[in-house]
Image (tube, rainbow, N blue to C red; front, side, top):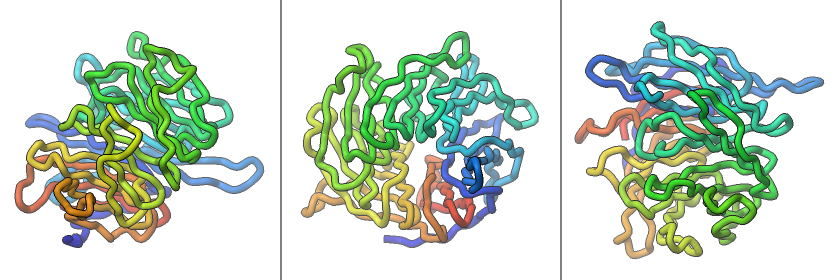
Length: 343
């Protein structure tokens, strides 16, 4: 295992918890969005936050704009039908927000869908997000009430669809499944269950329930390289790999340095067995999913220990940097840091 330092870091306005990367091309820069969340004690309590945008330069981040908001729990770039970028955020008021990116690289509100008047929106998912920057489409939102929300897209405006009680406790994560199974999704919760759903069959009953967990399920991501592979992360420092055709038992179980709050497969097929993990108190790491290991576990290839508090967000920034390693962006909560490093 290699321990690596940050080659650039910046301090955010509030505790940082989410990162999303909009890849650039020959004519447009790569833009990174980072969301923050702060609880203001009082009567009543307030939850505030920001969304900060940065242009990714060769060895640093150039700040573009910062939008004041209610607390942000998750965010995701997407592309409209005409390929113009938009940003979606899940916030502490239980809403999904859609922002357009202006020519001056700031965000302007386009649409908002209230999923709950009492719960926090904890995570969001768009179809195909595991493959890269997804097309704007129907979204899923998980809520602190244990509910899941299906948010529709009508003429590029958000419109509330079905909301259903999926879990007994906080639904920390929801994720659309693989593209070859439209309507299939997965959810995880503090009730120690992983559930599958198929919107084509309705939401009254899940397609499966897996209960073999000792801690809350906080991250789920399909593999972009194996059409039936699903990675699932839990609070108790474990990452499990499942075959979605037989989800009762994991194919592999990997121990990492902290709770597996966010997961991201490497975007290159040359590194298809590597998984980036935002590992909460353990920092961030790149896990090699080596099924040939005798103990059935992978090994940590690279670990970034530069965060001084909980690492809740991590995303690949580049996909083809070669031997020097690809650029990773990760963020941490109490020290309010956004860092760039190579993994």
